[in-house]
Amino acid sequence: MNNLELLHFIDQLANLLRSEQRKDGMEEGLQPVHIQVLNYLARCNHFSNTPLAVSQYLGASKGTTSQSIQLLCSKGYVSKRGDSNDKRITRLF
Image (cartoon, rainbow, N blue to C red):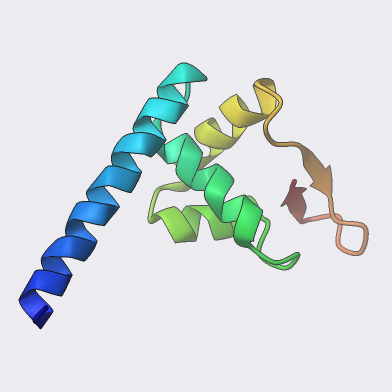
């Protein structure tokens, strides 16, 4: 398998994964961006579980990210808590 074939294979695999994410998300009333937020929060460390870090990861505005986080909180997928050391920071779990 040459590099071009490998690249094509990886692209097809990524498309399949995105398709599955969309399907899984739709069953729960979630958009792909909501699944991306959940995937990020599942993998990030305890320094990066903030709304700003999610916004930077997604490359989205703070407003769009805030709406996504709010929806995930209302559905019980995410909870928000203030940082115990710095009250200005909100942590997402």
